Length: 403
Length: 156
Image (cartoon, rainbow over all chains, first blue to last red; front, side, top):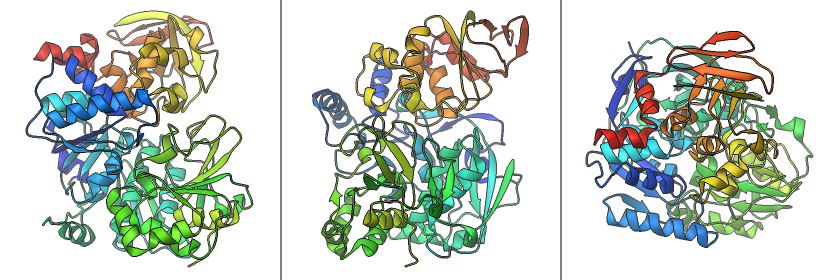
């Protein structure tokens, strides 16, 4: 009887295995060093059995000529190879891989820590650094230590204004930032039946904030339907009785809106304890909460009103941006006084547009609030989309109302 | 793999943003990363790292996959990093670029001499010897080759 990670990797927890990678992707940040390492491995060949992707999302468009030159070299390489290439504005790598690319049961490796996001499809998806990615480009393979798993048993349904981000912050708060190091999370239980693909992607996305190697959801009817709409016929996966290294039980109806206080993602507090904290910026987007359903929920709250603080909204992909235009969601967001950025990571990693000044405070829907991350001397609080919307309207941290 | 150096002691949960901030990543100039390593933790720290052994608390290197983090530490002249646990991507990255990481519960004072011998499986400071968790055979091979680039160059 196996965990999903054991089934996909075909070995028992604790064993070391070499496995072919089904899909491997890198971005404009990690791609630069990956290309250098690949060349230094005397690499002139690319693995044919692995689908390779390169997506520009971290500094898009380039902020200065140094970045532009690095991107120019990487773009030329991508175009001269058979890699799938997505240029600036296409969207965040993890989001693009979730738009009908990654399928249940696959082994997916991304050169970015939030590659765990794709575990939402029942794939074994994990992050590596640039040199590991270079070796995958060369050989199509990498080594894994098959992880022990943490069973996160979900029951019930959300009540009030709580949403998937609050659930994710709940489990990170309970596990701590290294609570699942070298382990995989598995989200199971009847509570999963009420979580959409967008919500599952949030759950899987934050698994690395508990140190986890992967965060998996079993593919079920919801997964099958999502992928069918994108042209893929896949089968559901069914959990077997298995041994978990740790177990956590969360009743979704107990989850309340939370905020992660800087500089740690596991320092979570109920929103009401922070109400009234003045904000200089609200940021809605990223691989955590920049999906269409997120922007639509945000728009529903701010529509017809005006935000009281500068608010940056960045769709996670071009597909999402286009959908917000067609549906009118974008007009509502702009009408409320927010501004829009190029699909990509935005200011989350503190490279460019939207970074904070010294002493400024941002409420962000992203996944990291480390010291100085969004700008030297700036502080980042993390919340759900609806908390961000309510707070943007007031200019201070504000508990969301039940919509 | 063996060596020694003066201990530079760091707390638990040092994240990759603290090791090398995002604002310094867009370059291939490794000396820039070494100059700014740990800047947001302690701007004076980089100057004390030549020949040092970092002895840190648990979960060292948590956060992003940026390989610039272990490269910055190596380029600053650090001989090895000892901690009770490492974040897993940082662990792989460090081995891949040839920076020895040692999982051990060694405790010591700032500035003390620390010796390590990975092959024999020990670290030592102030006369106290402490066991280490061995690397996997593959990681040992990669580290012995000098890193993953050299490893694959040898396997072509």
